[in-house]
Amino acid sequence: LMRNALAYSLGRAISTGQWQPRTAYAELLINDEHRGTYLVVERIKRSSERLDIAEISDKDPTGGYIIKIDQNRGAGWQTNLGTPIDYHYPKVERITDTQDAWIKNWFNDMESAMSGSDFAEQWPDWLDGDSFIDHYIINELALNVDGYRLSGYLHLDSTASGSGKLTAGPLWDFNLGFGNSNYCYCWGTEGHVYDALDLCGYGDQEPFWWQRLLQDPAYADALRCRWEDLRTKALSDASLLATLDALAAEIAEIETRDHET
Image (cartoon, rainbow, N blue to C red; front, side, top):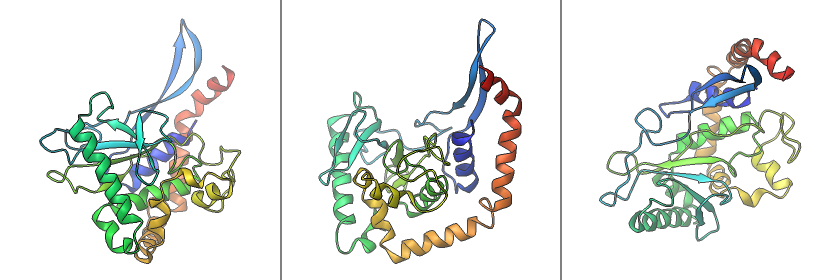
């Protein structure tokens, strides 16, 4: 009952300003009959109280957008290099031709830069490196088999009100994380998700930018430094255990009733 709550809690703990979904436990009763314990989670949406990005308009089609990596299980398109992108904000039925053309061209141009020989010099103009690092750390800490390829959100704020760079997150969907997977070798505690996906034939489902970034020594070094710093703070053994203990205490009583249902 803790995996999603734990992931979002850790995301909030290491966040440098990005909103991550807040959660609350709830018990469902219908006609006084207990129907289980549920985690109520804030949905990902554009809002001053959630993901505070610009409201999209044709006057400024540079943002903000929220997109989802989900193998086109919803309405979406594929980039020139084959990356499946799903619409989230604006919804497919509301996005205008101007906005649709702009975001598609943006992704094609970004991936062209990422696939080039000089990508290490190019990517900082397109991607918010700090957000990609933190998103990577939480997904790898959870050994989330869905990480990078399913239920993965990213957003792009306008150049007028934001950085104009693609930002990884918010976090979403860790029900198969933290050892709750029976495929792709993600039930253990060693290795990396992107390696496991390659080994079991799912590597082509993740956007190539994730592994491409790791080929830049400067990015890889920044990732290592961020991890080592967090291991002395929000992701230290003591902090991790304290977070787990707090969540366990919160559901100690309702967990028993959930198992009895």
